[in-house]
Structures are given as structure tokens and as C-alpha cells.
Length: 85
Image (cartoon, rainbow, N blue to C red; front, side):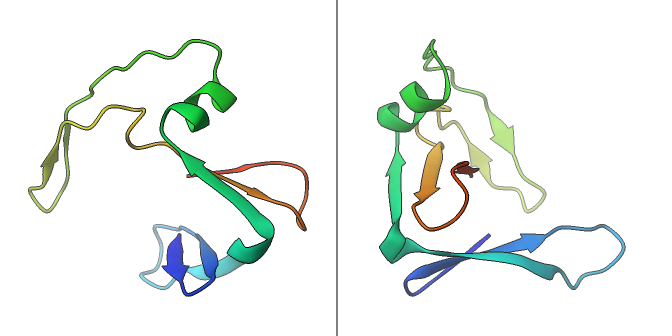
């Protein structure tokens, strides 16, 4: 997923190639975007502010909670399903 001015571009990730095929574009002008507690309450009935330590391949370490890293994009013009990020 890549954010460009006014849009989010979705890519199909494969392990066979370093080039990824574009799978969709979400127009942010026609979408609802929200995060944090509102996004978590939309996705699950129980909200646990659990902090899962993460270590990435480049050495970055993060202690952000799941609430802090949840983003929901609901596109009005696309299908009624949510794109979860």
C-alpha cells in the first residue's frame, strides 16, 4: 500500500519478484478514513490495548499498541467491504 496525493494505491505482494503488480486504487475523496480507538471498536467487540514488541529486518524496533497501528479505510464508491491496513 502506498499513499499518493488523494489516493491509496494497493499492490499484490509476491515473493517471486521485486516488482509488484498494482491491484487497486482507493480515492480518498470518496472514503472515510479513521484510526485508533474508533477503528478498533469497528473491527472487534473487545479492545485490548496490547503492546506487541516488533523488530523489523532493518533493525527498527517498535512498541506501539495495536490501537495505535490500526487504520480503516471505507470506500464509498467501491464495494461495501473495508480495506484493512
